[in-house]
Amino acid sequence: IEADTRVLLFHYGGVSCDVSNDCPPGMHYWFDFGGQTNESFASVQAIFEDPASTCAVSLGEGPLQRDDAVSEQQTAFFYGVQHHLNKPRTADSIVLNALEQANRRLGQCSATYDGATVNVLIVDNWNVGDLVEVQQTYNKAA
Picture (tube, rainbow, N blue to C red):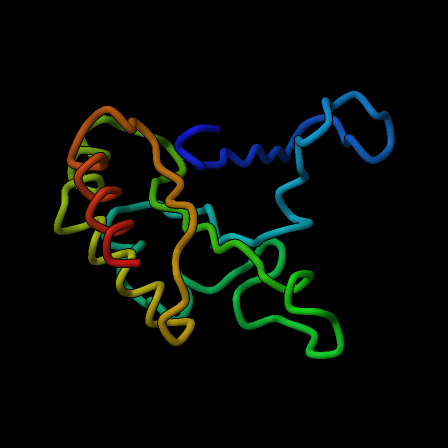
């Protein structure tokens, strides 16, 4: 609180807080606020093959799917980018989580939506590669 920072907590794929009220206050359903790219990639190459396709929001709503009749607050969506394979392997994560490859993916997906900020990079094996450096560099530039 003193640092004036915020943590947002999202969920999906589990209990629906809207129906059962099983979630604590402040836990938000991801697809009410954002969307994400496809999560079915068979190879490292497949992620980078066709950015117009692999960076397109396929689940939820994306940065350019806004209803102008609704207020800006209600249409400011988060953009999540899947950056992992169907079957996680550490060897593939080492390649994908390297600074150059992660930055390449962020750049491709941002460009797909006219420079929209990627808010969430969804990875496997976060502890391998350069993801901390990627995150720090990307946040400073955004």
